[in-house]
Length: 139
Image (cartoon, rainbow, N blue to C red; front, side, top):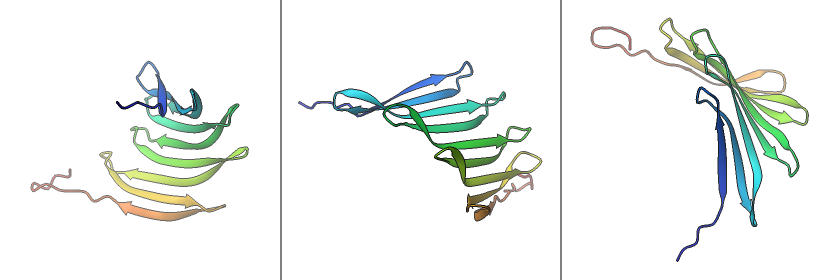
């Protein structure tokens, strides 16, 4: 006979638009569930995800770890996302992805950069090729 052992569990909350707002991650330690990580999700008026905040439980309070900030254009296309980590009392930039689009809202390029104390360093830049059908129409 096998015995199931507790390991971890998640509790989720959602808003009226079915957007996930939180994720509480608990870990089984000894004989009790203990707070481990807490994720908070924020959205704009168009239901675009604008922020993910990661926090960990330090035995008495939640402390920031990392956050992701997302920015959109007027067509709701993501134009940038930035990763930041918490450093004692302030957010520090980590990496930045920037996206461009053509007039049809097709993603045409991605620029990935990492932060180096005072400036961004390009890590990767890619143009996304446009495919044409036999009739010459852009897909």
